[in-house]
Image 1 (tube, rainbow, N blue to C red):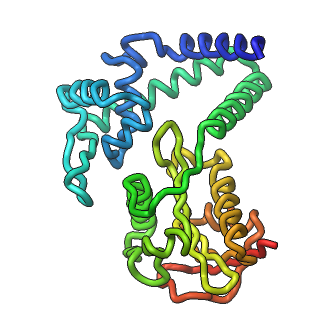
Image 2 (cartoon, rainbow, N blue to C red):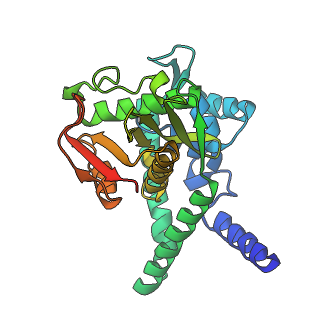
Amino acid sequence: MSARVAEIRRFSRTVTQRVGALNDQFASRDRPLAVSRLLWEIGTEGAEVVMLRSRLDVDSGQMSRMLRALESDELIRLTPSDVDRRIRVARLTEKGLAERAILDERSDELAVSILAPLSGAQQDELVAAMRTVERLITTSLVELRQVDPEAPDAQRCLRAYVAELNRRAPQRGFDPSRGATAKPHEVRPPNGAFVIACLRGEAIGCGAVKHQPSDVTDIKRMWLAESARGLGLGRRLLEHLEDLAREHGSSVAHIETSDVLPEAIALYRSAGYVEVPPFNDEPFADRWMAKSLV
């Protein structure tokens, strides 16, 4: 174990120095890495401040100082959420969007400078190793937690889930209160369960089970943040929800989904789900799928 610990510490020192994490002017901009990272995390669509704190694992004092620094540079503005005015949302200004684009460009240049001295085979080896390290570290950090469907983290995930559906298909006007719903009492024990996936204290995904009177359990509200995709977490969450269905005594799992979510459809197919005739009147569904749990 001690040899492994020493290797990890050596790896951390090498990476932090090479990417410029120790420089107060990260990527040749007039701010340290932490503030630049916050600017990047706010993203083009904005982000709730409480989510940013969790994502970056910083306390409220440090977050306030970083936000003030970005505000003073006119890179962001803080406004109440459209959904809940008690929630503060950070959004990039036009100047902030331009600065984020510069950071993206400089970060690409840094990545190129790391790859350039290596042969093609070495570049492939490095990128593959990085992908493995990221996946394994992320997997080790993610925790699946059963929570009340009306808990703040659950509601935050559901807002993000609905917002993504409406971004992908604004003409369809997705409304979770219509059709085959998953109301709080329907996904709360003993009728069901609501699960969130947490990474560094932040809820980055969710899913629910809704038990039917028969031996069928509906899997509902499967969603993962874009930053958490491609790491095998969707399958892990799906398998966890299936286990909850089995524990309840269900022998079949049902999922309805939309064609605007091709990644989800691919996941369900690879996990053994097959298309079946519609089993509910969900107006936003394009495909109905089922899987035997026995």
